[in-house]
Length: 368
Image (cartoon, rainbow, N blue to C red; front, side):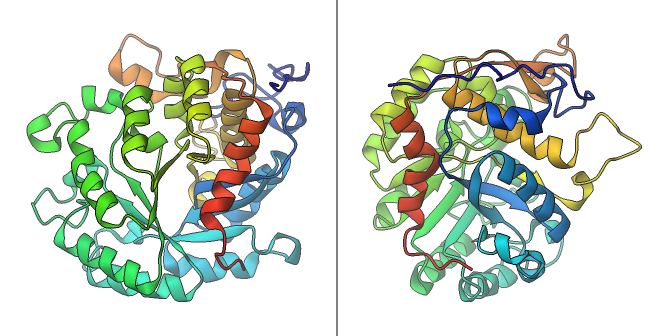
């Protein structure tokens, strides 16, 4: 049985001001009640950096049925965010161990400080650790020992420490959109090929075979679901999340039937995630840039777009500006949005993607 899209879905077009997170003028608060699935949702991939950002994020999460989320937040912000949550929201935001990227220029952020943070995050209740190694990290340091390479000496030391400390869920970001490899990463002598990004990951998946690895952003290759399916077949300890909303809408929206087949063929292996970036600079209106999108609209747009992709048969424009369209083809309007075609996943599959797959991954983890 498949879910049906309530008649009200998309009916609020043109009722709200236009901004980069809402080119359709949707009333996101009203639209939230227009989805058929009404069970709890776990968002396994967010970035919430402050108490104010957490407040507005949870307002949007409440509207869209997101019960819990895991966030990549600098250690120094964990305490303030937890302390700011009212009793009814306690435990809904959990923390993933990451370096503090806002201090990337400071000595030790990705080395000595990072090793201390691994243990301190664990003491604070974190049980998921993230290894970000997108190719653009080489712009920061492109040496063979760069701490942003997945298999650099310091990363391997930190991975061993994390395992010994007790982490059994590792998250990785190893590749970026095909559009970036056509533009920003066109110099393969520096950035390598896309498939080459996965070579060290495969070695580490085998080495840490009793760890669950979450591949962020559909493993980094939503453009080729055949390749990704084969990768999952080779590595039973690997799961993926559907975060990076603009990217997933653009690529999975081009192949909704193949995407539905992929999810159905890999039960328990696809987790819901948005990659919402909730920072102080995008939680309140910006009078200098009113088109930027902010606060509730910014966060709700990601929930709306991904839920539309996953559970409806919608066929139309995404409400979110996608800069990659203009980067690949400069003749395209910089404010263009991708075509969004929904995969209309069956109800039982939605339950797995939205909740059960992630619940299995985080089972037994301490909650605030």
